[in-house]
Image (cartoon, rainbow, N blue to C red; front, top):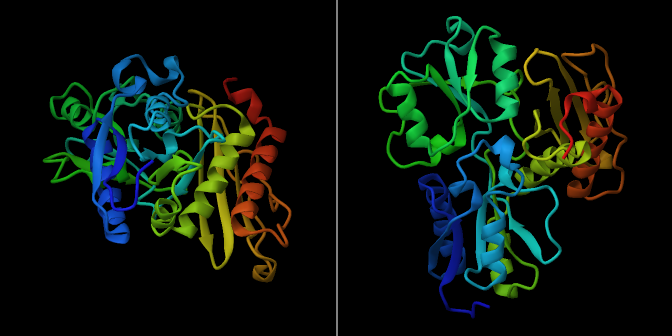
Length: 343
């Protein structure tokens, strides 16, 4: 274990993006702890296996090697992209901090700024995400999707070279990279109302061992953003309730509005445009109930419903998880299981 006054060793994937976002956490942790933070690059299966994530089982492929290194004492903390973490955290580990979330949206990157829905028939769109593939076909059924792996620079280069007409990327990833990764390319932000993203997208998770020193846990707690933790807890609970893994063709986005939690979740058929979605707003605290604020289902089928029972008496984290699980249950009641691959 790290002793007080020693360097804090931060385990991270080796990619430029992973090290950039870990660097942001390192600087913040140095400021609150008064200790130096050193990055420890670790190679994960997801970095070495070039097969499609949907083939190798995206759940955990970026986390397992990092967690093993943490358990062996090679580092003291880990920084993950939260959307890559399985919903079940091992008993010997703890997500000690979830800093404030960056932009949760996806962006479509093209050479000339043509919106995704206006790209011509047969245009090639790069993405390996089943969710994004389904959303591309909803937005513009005339497009062709091509499986895509590699770092951000290599993905952007395939657009710049003309090999692809567009790629779908996370806005947060672009914003965390140094300099101007887009260069002459153009990014179209895809609004969360019509293009919700993966549970936890835009958020980072700082993980350590459950028996980490108290002073380290206290320093990490200072980095935690409660509003972000509440929102991503609900999003991840939707995924957990659907029981399909982080490569499922589903999306969930939550936000706190005047003390209530709004959750939008959609499960997609792979390519035919069919999807089942729910939009609910629920109180996080008993005294925050608002009159006339029912949830509203959207896309398929039409109707209204309030999604989850009020979580009276529960703390906001427990309440958000209960709301997310209830959303998953309602999606399954409406036939979402028929659209989901089984783990």
